[in-house]
Length: 228
Image (tube, rainbow, N blue to C red):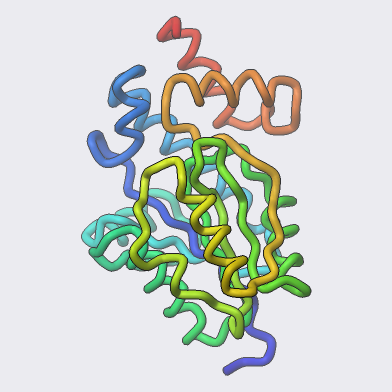
């Protein structure tokens, strides 16, 4: 184990293709626009990776046969395939792999919150200096980030969990606290999964630094074009 091993930031992604990404959002704006938005979210995050100097970003690609396609399309760090189990087992396997690699801190994020800033990611990494875990609640009842220190990892938060419901954050937080984990809570963010959440993020971040991003500009364009 390397004493200077950087923390790992597991980045759960999918290769963007119709029917594979943003399916709920696609019902309101169409497959083409949904795929275009998700693609831009990925591109903007990859551009930001060099500014996150305090961790190694590791893309975990949902489609095992698309790992190399993802690297060829987007560049960035080399990706690996997610295990083909339920979401909890996929996240658990990724954490275990990164801890086995020698990381003392491991965090996971998804790809549904394009407004997630590198400052918040760095805040999460630093929070693990004095906390056992860190979590970023999403306003739909899930979470957009979860992290652990190696010696305080808790597998229980991934096992026998009902996913894609509005109680995921509350249940995860409850399990952490009941297992005596000191938890650092990040700001609440909105996952861009539906037309309503798309409009919420565009309105909330108008005039901010995020509004200068290509993701924001495309989101705004889609709202105008679709007249939603």
